[in-house]
Each structure stands twice: as structure tokens, then as C-alpha cells.
Length: 352
Ligand code: NCD
Ligand code: ZN
Ligand code: ZN
Ligand code: ZN
Image (cartoon, rainbow, N blue to C red; front, top):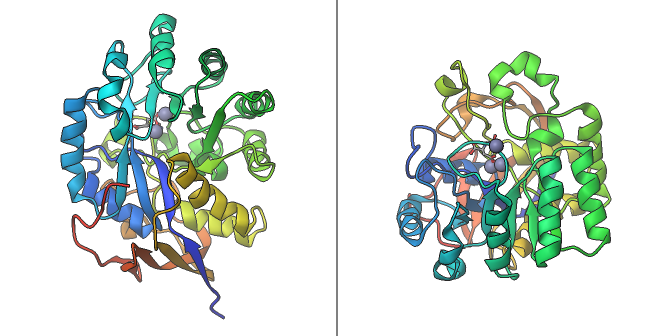
């Protein structure tokens, strides 16, 4: 029996569109098609391109590239060794400041405490400072947020230690929010044995105990939202001798979560809160108006990478059995996806 369910359109606050500069992996058109196919109607692009989004000029170039998008979109500003002086020029045009406090994909890395303090001091309180900060580095980030009284957002929280830090910070009324990714919720480091370099990412996949604490954090209300960290690389790059970090996730996130819903790992209310309501709040929006996803909650199917829209063309979830299929997606009142087909033209996307 078909049991159609209507969900508010998903908003993904952590996506790497790779455009401009690394469009062999993905671009605004292909990534936004993948987004719609996954029920994501709005997304925010990360700044870590080969020529990163670190000044107004680069932001203007980004905006131009984004005109190809079929879903709604926004941007973050990337911190480097000196660009806190430019905050005033870009603040109103971005959803937050991204600081890479650990090594990961791309040229952005800020480890120097004096530089970090300048960023925390100068970025206004009303928008988040998003950090890639793993383990000990997260403690440093929370300390900075507490000292400068700023809004810290923890990207891709992955371990029980990190969850404990965020929980404590929240108890102490430090303004901290956090996201978890589908890959840290559905894969563990055991998968590295079968997937090899395809399962290489930052933060790395963790233990089953960590995965369990992330689900616990979700159901206890410590985790604020789910973001995919869609980080496509070509299969050739991933299978090279120095595979880059990151995996795609836009199209597989909702089916995995619907499966979890079917298995009673998450409630429908929580799923909606984490994928749509809280991401909208995080961006200072109510929602993407008049946008929804119709899903068949009972449909069993298998994720096949050949059916994906992402340019990279592979998935760490290839072959996985899931329960719950996206039937139709509507963006701003218009039907944009039907039966796995994107039925909207290049450029339909608008700034969030
Ligand atoms: C991301 C990428 O490839 O841009 N990679 C990843 O492993 N998550 C960068 C990041 O989010 O750290
Ligand atoms: Zn270092
Ligand atoms: Zn990161
Ligand atoms: Zn990322």
C-alpha cells in the first residue's frame, strides 16, 4: 500500500559545489540537480574552492557561477590569515563565516591563535562562525566563542567526545549549534575495509559507539541539524595514490533518514526539525516558501550510483537497501522533480 507523506523541503547548510575551480568534480548545475533529486530545495555553498571565497571579488564570481543553479542557494565567507578587515563588505551577502581550524580539502587553514582571535573578535554576533574543528581543536573553538561571546556552529560533529563538549557548552549557555552528517550516522570505520579510499573523509568515519552517541544526541536535542557535507571528488581522484577527503551525500541523505524513520531510530517530527525547520532557523529564514517533498514511506529500493545526478557519479551507499522513496519535489510552488527526473530548467534557483 502506498503511504504518501508530505515533508517540508529540505535545507542543507553544508555543501561543496566546487564551482568555480574544480568543476571536474561538480558544478552549480549538477550539484543543484542532485540537491533537488534528494529533496533539498535550498543549500549553502562552502568557500574552500582552489580559489576560495575570501574577498568580495571572489564572492561576486561565485554569485555568477550560482546562476546555473536549479535549487535555491546561499554562500559562506572563508577566513584566511588577514581578511577580517573585509567582513563589513561581505557580511550582508553571506550566511556565516567558515573557519577551517584543521587540515582538510582546499587551501583554507587557520591555526594561529592571534589570527583566530581577530576573526572571532570582528565577526558580528548575529550570524554563525562555522568551524571545521575536530576533537581537541573543537575545545579551542568553543573557548574562543565563549571568550568573544560569538555564535559558534560546529560542522560535521562526529565523535562522542565532541558531542560531550557541545552538550557541556550548551549547558553553560555558550551559543553553540552543531550539525551531523548522514555518513557519520550510517557508516563506521568498519566500512573503510570494503570501501577503501571511497570512505576517506574529514572527520574520518568513527566507531559504532560514536555512531550510537550521535543518534543519542539527536534524540536528546543536542544535535541541531543534519547537513550532508556533500563533498564530491571524481572516482579517478578517489582511487589515486593520494585520495582527497570527502564523499557526495545530497541524494542519499533523505532515503537513509526515511529508512531510519521506518526502523524507529528517529521520529517524523525530529526528522523534519533536523532537515528543514532548524536549518531554516540557522539561516535566519522561516522556510523555503511553498516547497515540499512527497515521499512513499513504504517503498523499498536499492541505491544505485548510475541513477545519481551528482557529476562525480559514485556513492559510498551504492547497493544499500533503503525504505522510503522521493516521488515528487516542489520548489516555490512548482513541481521540480517527478519519478527521479529533474523537470526544471537551468537557472530556476534563486538566492535564499
Ligand atoms: C570536504 C571537501 O572535500 O571539500 N571534505 C571532507 O572530507 N569533508 C572539506 C570539509 O568539509 O572538511
Ligand atoms: Zn597544522
Ligand atoms: Zn570540514
Ligand atoms: Zn565540508
